Image (cartoon, rainbow over all chains, first blue to last red; front, side, top):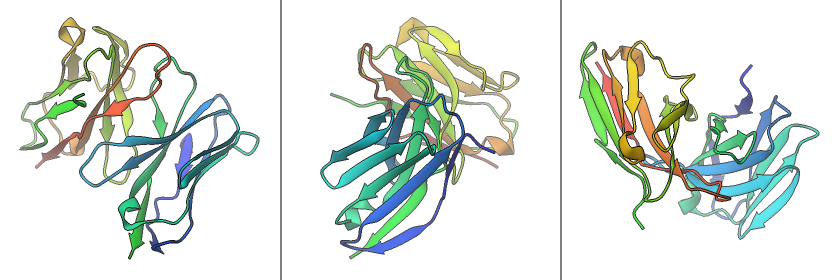
Length: 112
Length: 114
């Protein structure tokens, strides 16, 4: 079993839909949780960052962390065709620069 | 501010040949990472540098992979000899000092071994 599990999809939705992306993890030592977006032929870019449990909102994006269930989510409201990309969840034990542990990514396609 | 620069962007080689990738991190970033991303997977760490010191290379296949970061700035990752299973995207990332936690990724080098 991998430390971080993520359904690879693909996920196809119409423009304007609410998208829910999820990851589960097995190691309770993870403290920092991130979502990266990766467009085709590009490197990942940080989208959302959350420490410990709770919610964080940034525009159309909301990240949720439930440490008791070892489950994290990313919600995208009013999805746009420009949101079409692969979304990678990532986790780390601390802020000391240790490596990120990534899920395999979920490929999202938003049609207009 | 320029982002993380990697070259080449694409490389096709035959198995058993050597190959090298180059990374120039964001200016002032003292932490540098090399990740490998296989098709349909998330990135996995190969090696992490703090300045010029390799502080985590536990996942680097040392029989064929080597890396260096001279003067704590640019870095080179080398594979010799390459195997078919090395086909992947090699990503370089860098991180600044202090409380800035974000790792900034370059566009990657896509390696195809035939």
